[in-house]
Amino acid sequence: MRTFSHDVGRAALVLLALAAFCLIPLDAWTALPSLCLWRKLFHVNACPACGTTRALAAFFQGEWAAAWKYNANVLVTAPGLLALLARDSMHLWKKIRSTPSSS
Image (tube, rainbow, N blue to C red):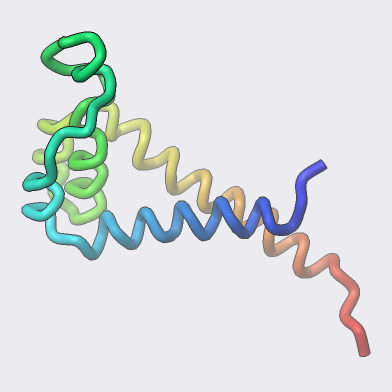
């Protein structure tokens, strides 16, 4: 059974991530070191997810060519984040509306 706080928590986390992608300049994202666990463990040049954070930041700042260049999976992950936020927001809205108010 899902709880009220579960919907609020995930929606808040996704909203916070989207705000960070929109507000933190793309140069700041690209200056960060690579934290890819796959690269460190398996000594590969790149994993399928490498560049996703920078791609999402570029996407939500309107730099679509740069987003595609960082990682093409942004075409799935960015709309997926938006859909997740919309879904959680709708669940939260329905839960708030169905909760009886104490008068």
